[in-house]
Length: 95
Length: 275
Image (tube, rainbow over all chains, first blue to last red):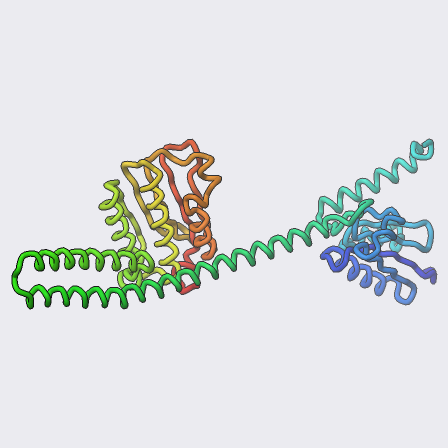
């Protein structure tokens, strides 16, 4: 297992339902699969719309895996853990 | 441009589009980030504020209605007790004078005329007091009061009017009784004033979880303009009374012969005591 620190950028809309879910789901996912090897930057688009536009974020919640490269973008509330793990390359091709 | 056409980029664009469509379809999106603003969230905030102000307005209308009913009841009591008492004393006084004075024709004629006027005035005072606050509602209950109202309506207007109900006389709370009575009264007034009907009918029945009041007539029906100008027919007041009890009021549409006013109130609000 690699010791690379995973850096995430999660775009949320305040405390809206799906945004809150995405925060919780990401925190749980990191705790389980990337314990001590991750960083999450939260961007609230209601406060920082310009940053969202800069990163071409269309909707919230949007999760970006910034590092390790290549960048990955996942939309939605991250409820589907298996899909999310696969998209973030945290589970391999065996599934 | 050529990069956009490459298979890899095309596949990526398609995947992103599919992902976007998926999260939109599955209601996982809180906000759409646009060039000028963040939508959806703002829209929901505005909708919530609008709904809140609607609720406040409804509550205010309900409180005003209750206040109005209290004031009417107080005025009715004052009129009945003070003026009724004074007029009755006046009547006794005139009787005493008629007996005490010599039976000279001109004076006795004047006393009889005044006595008749006082009797008429007493009747008027009683009628006004009853209109302001139908005491019979408390004494007889809603059903009997409606029956009495329908009889009075037939008497005043000559329009045949039937009343049917499956509610027991003691079933309704005072607040609901007053609301239903006032709505029925307003609907009958509209029939008398506007409908040009020869027959009318009123029903008060329980239907599923609701109590349903209908007032129908075979008159000329409503025109769209009249429905639009609901206030002219007291429809706003009727609807406010219905909404204060979590109910609805509907009118038969334009172009139909006759008019039907339907008021649907939750049984729970009608049977339990409510304000």
